[in-house]
Amino acid sequence: MANNEILLNIYPWMIQVLGLKGCDLLIFAIIFRHTKNGESWYIKNLSEYSEMLGYNRATICISLRNLTKKGLIIKEAQTWQEDENQRTKYKINIDKVEVFMVDYNDYKDTELIYFI
Image (tube, rainbow, N blue to C red):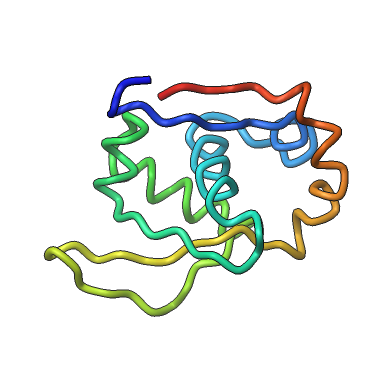
């Protein structure tokens, strides 16, 4: 895998049950991968998401807003100024997706692996 590639696990419940697709699906999968313990936070600015996924900043912003509105991710109200970029913390809403994670091991053989 090249240095600029990332590996995402996309589980069927993300598509079939949550109804995610496109940029919403990819962002959810990224945040899920890093915060599935329900305690960790994932911090990226819009430019970093944009560069990673190939979507423009406006699309990234819309997807983050969509996921927050659906209650699938939690946005930390506090923001920081680092490297002149504003960053906001996100994590999955464990209460909302925990029911799907109970059978998480059942999905290991059916995951879609997505290289970016």
